[in-house]
Length: 189
Image (tube, rainbow, N blue to C red; front, top):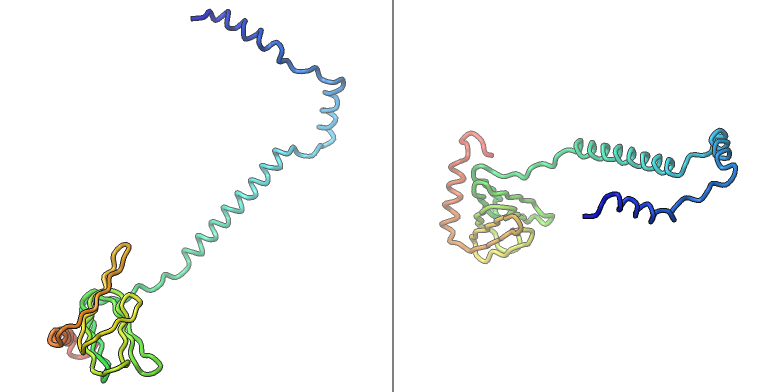
């Protein structure tokens, strides 16, 4: 290993040519006069002032956005039934949603009914022919070929499966009878 004394001397010899130039005459006096005269702030101080302004503005803006998000009312949760859902539209259809299903319906301007299956299993019995009843599963209108059908919509993490089956009307009648049996005697739901 090299002697530290030799290394130190070698470093001193290499650095001899890197000295600073001598200051110009009167340099120290000019600096002191400028400091006494109130010279403008250094550029670094201006940059820090600008950075502090942006940081403060970002913090205040973030707090305002967070407060607005917290004060916004929550959207209503989709309706789903713990028991069967029963919809009867005289002269058009009878629909029964299995427990846990989410079913929406609306009446069109022409008097027809649109039943939308968002999730779950729904049994449908049409009593009218033609376009009086439209069934929508996963956002798309589906076709029921027979008088009775089963629509199932299953939602997964990244996909939605919709299945439409024509079934015997006795299966739909059994689902309708079960839904009617669950209704309270003194009032409907």
